[in-house]
Length: 478
Image (cartoon, rainbow, N blue to C red):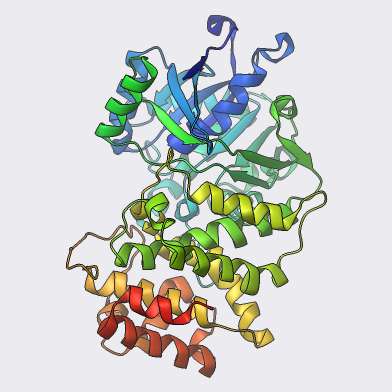
């Protein structure tokens, strides 16, 4: 195994980026790119100050601090060859639960030019039907009153920007790194709605002094279990309480709209563009939607690792048919992109044994994923009169996964749906499969108005219950 250490003096790196949400993906993606460009003498001001805002972040914070914020990243090659990178670009780490004032002060600091975010698809607090920011949320209401330590990311950022304005510390860029279509527009809509409601003077300043570029991010990064920590440490020979591992494929496309400057990430392979739309559509519609398509049927069939599921040629053909028949006609390829090669690479990435991603991770938070990855193209497919077989089967599989909580081998499981509402649960419990189409994940899609979709979906719901997911899946493979 090849170990690649950084060669810059970490003590001479200053933080120009503040990142909120120091999870595995961030540490395998943005930190990876940033670590590479810090080797250049003219980039020493672009280190990263990590910010964690949740009580559940305590273990990560303590582990990273125990090793001076350095950690190992194992990049798992599709050819079976791995490389280990020592990452030193995380120069500061603030835990908001422990020191909220430090978070606010850092956002306000003149040295910070960019705030980046990985707060998950559901973290932007947008109503799934209207797309509007939910001002009625209890924690949002608390922060709007500005009467204590902020309870949300919106409260922290608003307070930091308010102080930045007061201290005349200049403009700043807020760059979302979450898997959302037009994630910059989403971040702008959410933060501006909050700030407008809390402080109209600050909102005027933000409109003139804060930019929100869209970006597209891509790198499969599994969660890390205690067993993974032992495995990675033994394999690399590097003692590490907080290792990360990921696939060898990595991509980041960003709209070049940074009001206060940016790192030269292009030196490490980041692509800058005027419009990220075509890249977003390709990635969300092919990679993310295919992950969702794979997740629930595979889990119900008893698979717990993605690479194991990809050994089942029925599942592989199911995904390939979805990509070729359902999605390719709807997704124009970005310039200089070979769509056939991209799809072939996706199949290779999903089957990468060295990464061995968890199917449960793909199943997590379907309520937030369906509206972003599946529903937009499904609406287009319905209007165009396209074949709805595979997406109807996916929807029926999702219902079965949420409703019965037992796979076809009799193994029970816990679901991970942090945004599931009481009304959603009633629809899941309803014995009429059609009721499920009112789930918050599908609101605004009008699925119940498509007789063709409802009939196909209802048929699959009954078949999955009576025959099992695997047998039904075999029947729809062409």
